[in-house]
Structures are given as structure tokens and as C-alpha cells.
Length: 414
Image 1: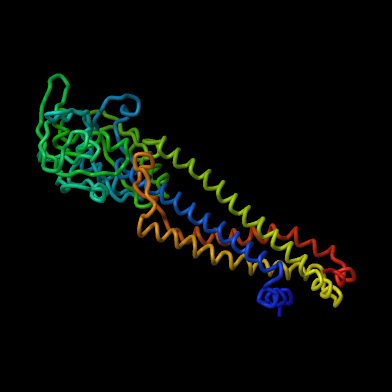
Image 2: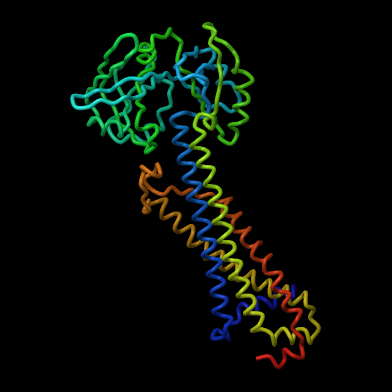
């Protein structure tokens, strides 16, 4: 049998000295590890949930990869490009692509009897994936969009609807200004709310046919195509394949294709999300430091209280290395109990928030109405293992105090 492990287990399970100093020290050390791990689990869960929620919302509006006219990346004008069935098939066959959809953009003014507002009309067709907008639909119903006829239906954000005092079923006039002023009357089919201000304040959806007609574009022309990938982690690889097969190619109107990823389309959003990682590392470092310091304090108290026992062990021939291992095993028992308690506290609070959304946030500031959480089991296991290893590692140096304890003097130690 492993002698240090056996002795450490006997010491840890000894309940005969619960009024001595070591018992409060053990409880404090256990609580320090538990609180540190619980805070780390909650921090990682909330940051991951927040990052992925915001990322999914941005992707919901702009997809993972966009194919556009090369001129759109150097000018502010809305230059069309041909997206026909053959090109869609080519893009769909690229490894990693799960869906391809066309879109067209134009600008106009929505006007009611009391107010008006400039908005961006995004025309989409029947292949457009409406699942994201459907998840955030708060009023009305999702319209059926088309590329061959106009239904004159609009899907508005709640922010736009509130500004213009519109609700589902209302009719509203839209004005489009180029060489002449043209008017169209739309019916508000549905209202969505994503709390992403930069999109909700100006973007509405209608038929692809309507927008291409308003832009006076030839059949087959549109603003571009949006591509969704099956694995977000492989986005860079799929984007490289698009660069090889699509970029710098020309359509029948000599428009040049070019691509960009969602990172390139909205760099400010993703740079901001990456800054959150710095906060996570700071919190993790602080919590590990708290757990480590409480364990060091507890171990030193336990060693001092067990001085006579250490002296006896040395007197019967135990080496310093064996005794150090004994107290390190003792520390592992304390840390393990703290990890169990920390997991219970941390995961409990995470699941409560996930199921109830009890912690609310200001959507105008945080883009979400409740604190999002994500349960990532592999990462949580890694946090537990890292906490255990780091805490044991920082205890190695304090354990060398044992080597300075002499058997003869320890017999008289009180």
C-alpha cells in the first residue's frame, strides 16, 4: 500500500480533533477552492454564452461568408453581380458549405401619417433561411418571400415599428429616390426583435423581386450571396476555398466576384468580443491565486499542528520526501472536496440561469435581455484538472517546511 496516501487518508478522516486549529483551516481552504472554482465556471459559462449569442446574431443577419461585387469593398455604391443557378451549385459543392442564399439591398424611406424613417430594404428569395428571424419574431407571422413576384409584405424590427407606431397588419408607404421618386405600399407581415441595435434600427426584409426591380437590375443580378458553413471552427478553411474558386472571376456583365467572411464584414463586433477573453484570463488568474493562497495557509497551519506527528514519523525512519508526499496527498483530499463543492455551486447557478433567466440585462447596452450561459463540459473538466494541478504545484514549496522539523525538538513542541 502507498504509505503517504494511507497516512494522509487517516489524517483527513480523523474526526477526533475537530476543536483544534486544523479543522477551521481545512474548512477555509476547502471553501476557498470551492468559491474560486465556482466563480471560474460561472465566468467562463457567461462569457462563452455571451460571445456565441452575439456571434450567432451577427451571423443571422450577414451569414458566414458573403460573395459580392469587388467594387462594393472599395466604394459606398451598391454594385450588383450575377448569382445564377450554376454559380449557386458551384458554391454549394465547396467543402464545408451548408447553405447558399441570394440577397439584394436598396435604401428607402418608410412614411406614416405622423412620421418617416430611412431604412435599408433587404430583398430575399424563397431559399433564404428564415429560422434566425423566426426565433426572434415577436408579432405577426413570417412572410413567404419570392424572386419572381412581389408580395408587398415587410418584415420589420420592433425598433422601427415602435418609432413609426406600426404593428403587424398595418400598411405603410415606402419612397425610393433615384432619378425619380417612386412609391410602394407595403403590408407589415411580422415584427422581429434581436436587440442588435445596428441592425434593428435600419433593416427590414421584403421580396428579392421587389428590390431588384427598384434597383432597375437585369434578371439574375443581385447584391450578392450569403453562404453558411456547417462548422464555424472551419470558417477560415472554407473561406480560402472560396478565394481559390470564386474570387477574381467575372460574370457576363464583367462584374468581378469577391468574398469576405463575417469577421471582415463586422470587425468591430468581433474585436470587441475578443477583448472579453482578456477579462476571463484575469478572473481565472485571480481565482486560482485565491484558491492557492488559502491552500498554502491551510497546509502551513496543518504542518505546524502536526509537528509532533512529523517528529514521530522521522524518528521511526520516514524520510522528508515521504512525509512531504503525505501532506501533499492530504492537500489533494482538501482540494478535491473543494472542487466537488465548487462544481455543485457553479453548475447549480449556471443551470438556474439557463432555465429561468433570472439575471436580466439591459438589451440596449448588452444586446441580450438576460445573461446568456453555455454549459461546456470539456472546458469545465479542464478547469477542474487545471485548478487541482496548480494548487498542488504551489504547495510543493511550503511542504519543504517539513525538512526543518527535527525529531528531538518536535517531541517537546506544543
